[in-house]
Amino acid sequence: MRTRKLALLSALAVALSTVVVVLAGSSTTASAHGAMLQPGSRTYFCWRDGMTPQGNLVPRNPACAAAAAKSGVNPLYNWFSVLRSDGEGRTRGFVPDGQLCSGGNQTFDGWNLPSNNWPLTHLTTGADFSWSYNAWAAHPGWFYLYITKDSWSPTRALTWNDIEEQPFLSVDHPPMSGSVGSVEGHYYWNGRLPAGKSGKHIIYSVWKRSDSKETFYGCSDVIFDGGKGEVTGIGESGPPPNDPPVPGACTAEYRVTGNWNGGFQAEVTVRNPGTTAINGWTASWALAAGQQINSIWNGTRVGTGSPVSVRNVDWNRTLQPGSQTTFGLSANTSGGSQPGGTLTCSSP
Image 1 (cartoon, rainbow, N blue to C red):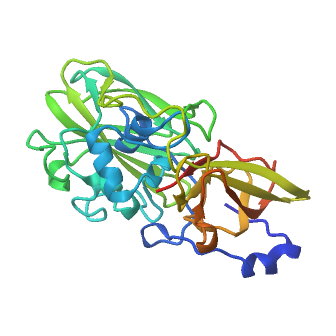
Image 2: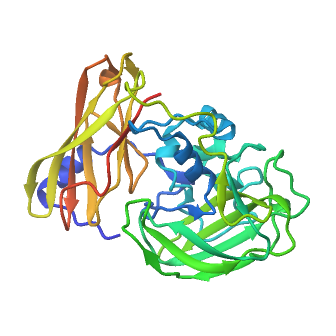
Image 3: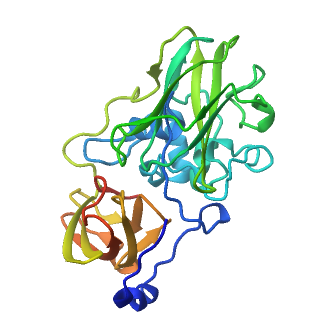
């Protein structure tokens, strides 16, 4: 993506540039986002399993809870970001054994854990199926779908020897429907499920962009038992917390404080409406088309591209019940100054 810098702000942008986490050892900006919706990926289903009415994440499925215990819940707010910026469509010999479900992206290590309890999509072997892949940030590319061998067991970490060598289905630049920056935005196609399968398997998806090196990876846990896409294992340990707000929950509110030709400034207010103190918070939102962050103050940006994730600095880490703090940002834009999606806020 071409970056249009304002000359007036260039010095300020350099001075206030934030520390970024480079995904998988690459400095390439990650600008596409997505994950399998049907059959759902582990990160997508765990996000659905844990999302509460207040916008917090409390995974209930045992496998999802174990993954969050290992890697934290923050990755689930970015369930569509299991990617390698330097992937170039590579699979065997690139993504290490035991790290296939995270694509070798350490942020999602918890979703590599072997378990019999991952949420399942029930399918019929050899049947036609309507596939759906989220397009949180849309980009052209190819999709490759693999299936585990009959010898695979869900009780051990997935390796390349567990995956059949050739994809059972490949899709070239499929059509898209719905709005980007939302769960509803998705690529879709029809294709046949692998024949001769029974019991539990993993459908392994690879999305290779045709306009950059960025590549997405994902594990969708399925069971071939004659089903037609039904899902089990989500929210089966009781309903998510409702009112009053869960202790330590946080909220985030976005406000534009200034506009100019080609740019804007905004302020995000982070509040603690809960009953106990928060020790650390992260606010996240999707950038609208044409927006690029220049600088952030009173917060630390985590990662690059969209969605934007900003966490506390030391002095505003702790929020007592009923208190709030703010951080600011400046951005270039070729469009509007509003965020491209709803703000979320998470705390440990």
